[in-house]
Length: 336
Image 1 (cartoon, rainbow, N blue to C red):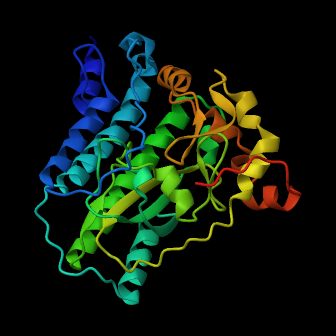
Image 2: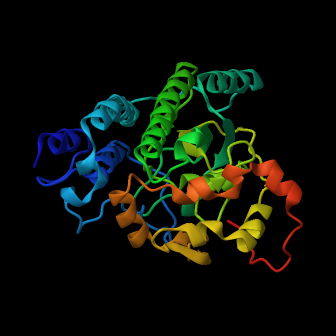
């Protein structure tokens, strides 16, 4: 195992032969053992999709092929991300005792002002359905703040590429930084706050984003929103605040009607991993991708992101697509 592989293993965890993102996430999940009670998943909930490709060696992975210049660009992004996720996990020590469970409009205004000034693209609130909690996990409270950060779409013009991969890592780093900052602010004001793991997580962030009305999940499985298209990343903060201004209306479900006609992501997928139409899972969610094929190509090709880059909502923008789209009454209906 070369020296860079050893550095990656230190950052991400893993076996003696290669780094493992799943091992890193499992180490964060163990913090849930500090709670006597958790909001448990639905009995039909799915496990979190694995990130590792067991049969790939380190030499098969794109990380083994990074140049020295790329490594020097990679480490200043990944090391802070790792440290911020550790900071997030440490908030799950089970020791914090909230003083309040009802927030004033003034507090929520201050929270949102801080969020936008820190780089948040959009923010909403949700009561977390149990079928969005991954199997064998749990959350401290059933309410959550959902927020997104935007990624620079120009970085994805040649995806899969190192530039695209690094932009995704920056997005996760921003999620972790902002999540920790907002959680500390909420705790300072007497509310429970547990930032989600920016990368991975114990709930289905895209599904929560659609439920919260941020946007709609496209046929590629990514959340599409009016301002960012698919160029975004999502995070959560679980909280005991019971009077959050939760919105139940979602004006973006028409997006999937467009997807059923477009299918550009399906045609453009290098390994044909995107289903012709999403499949409804037993838990009420939708599965858009054959995860094994996607994961292997992902791990060999800079995290891929071809579907994100080629999506018309990313290329043209949400409003331009909406204006031109005349509707599709024959489209299959998938409601989360």
